[in-house]
Image (tube, rainbow, N blue to C red; front, side, top):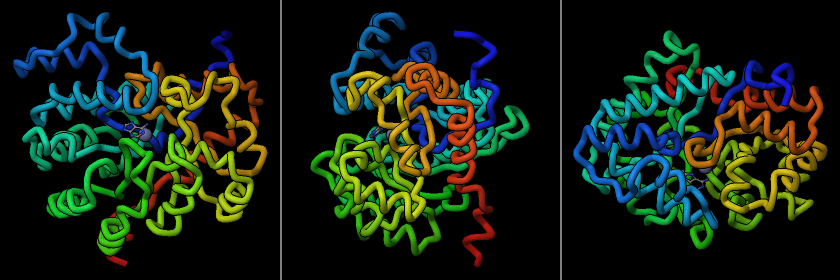
Length: 326
Ligand code: ADE
Ligand code: ZN
């Protein structure tokens, strides 16, 4: 691997990043000690050993378990600040950051603690790291629609800090249509809309996310490759996909990186972007994902620059306040 060809310096936007998925083992143990939480892992090496996943659910089990160490505003601020420092070092200039409030509310951590904590880091990110940011609140699709609606209500006092809503967690068996009313309510509040679809779930979930939830981007969207008519539609409507190549390998959605459909999707004319999803768990941040696809898929310079350009074109860079008062 020649350092001359590394894509770390290439300016990029990260559009698919779960802040809870940036919790590195070292910080997890530090926060555990600070908060008197006992983790069921001996040390950071033992924890890293657990990062061998069979599928999305086996990852989610560990992802939710480790959140136990996140208790205070300071914890969330430290988590976000550590991510922003690493992202900036990998060429990220703009980050749209997902968070999962239901996973914290369920543990007795208030919405205000989560949002104020994240905001403490995001508010100084431009100055400290040269990264502009947005917050996207995700609903857990394996929880009820009523719970999602309550979560949206709980976010009421913080909507000036939240750009949009997303949908994540266990996909299969939880189709987008389950959240129709929640997304209608979010749209009425002036929030942008995205959703995970076609990661483990079928291509039909992608169509449903577009038609029923009115999403502007599809998170993952990998399985659109199985439906040529859907690919054609996504191209025609210029729907961005926030692909996460290293995540797909670690969660066994693709066998190896060399089998990833990214080159085919790009050749089909899709607005693809490359992102890290849960970098602490999947072995790489945004720049690592760019370097990995260049290495494994042999994308040429023009294609890699296109991916970076797409990330800014697909970003929610518009001023939130301006949009809501229109
Ligand atoms: N939550 C965190 N990462 C996720 C992913 N890749 N898919 C669904 N839910 C998630
Ligand atoms: Zn994700």
